[in-house]
Image 1 (cartoon, rainbow, N blue to C red):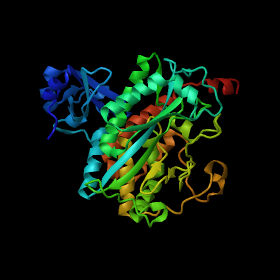
Image 2 (image 1 turned 60 degrees about the vertical axis):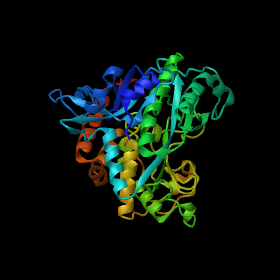
Image 3 (image 1 turned 30 degrees about the horizontal axis):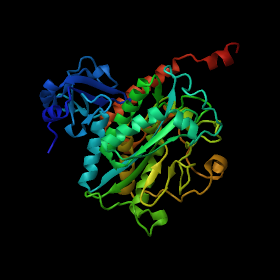
Image 4 (image 1 turned 135 degrees about the vertical axis):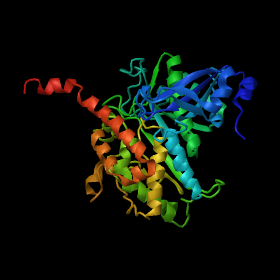
Length: 435
């Protein structure tokens, strides 16, 4: 039975609801609704002008209504009189087909019809910076290899533990927090779960982390490469496919190579097949390609892929098999849309299962030092334009995510690329002023 939001408001002391949706660029949009009005909003949705966000609409379109999902309700522990709700955009009486949460829900429903249930977890990396984002917040965080630095971690104890305490209170199952490979960088992990639930939590995590950092006079950024000399912010996804009851992992076969079933390898084959075209979604910004194709960082490694390869428990590959029955896809970065990442992974994987795609043999080498030895491996796109062109050629993405989504995403991201190309950089001044 769905949650009755009016009753929940009275029982929990909620005075306002944030009815929130994520647009194509991953930006959270919301309206703040008093509890007295939530009954009508739960049925009809909160009204928005879709053109005012990054959705493919015009000022001539009618009102878009974001209909909240009552089961997604999260009461803000740091502001308990507010409840957050993930919402699904509707227009003219039907779901907006290119809205990210709607895209994921449709793909999950198609998989469910075939008895397949995607579970995934995310590793969210972020930097804590000065409020303007130009400097690290911790001037003492200067180690050349800062990963797991205990002192730097404890200097941010108040921020990290406040975020973790919220996840504990909400029942997410957080299990570890650490200082990551870049100075000023952190990662927080919580239990994997149903794909839609994880996507909602991923979306909320970014909002929560930024908010708590701001409350401490700091800034949290998930920008893929906020500092050129430091390791970028990845968003590694751990994926597995289960039965309806959540008891049988279809990827697990103790007799299979590295504990992966034939079905699992076909799913992986689909990811390998579509990796080039997926990149426009998993690495969606101009800045994303400064992480994927970065030179060696001050720590000695970028920890990000640039080639379409997979291996065992080896972090130098695009896909790692760290354990039996699951894959870690290391392609995505911190800018990835929380709903589009599992959607495109599921689309590519199901294509692989349907067509029994072969991922090829795993590569057991250090790709950072010996990658030149791999013959025939595809290189990931060098920039956003290349990625969009690869995506445009993909029948898998077009057929799975839908033509409306493809058209909208290509149009809006293409416009963003053009906007970037019109920007004059200091590099151009320094290197071509006198040419």
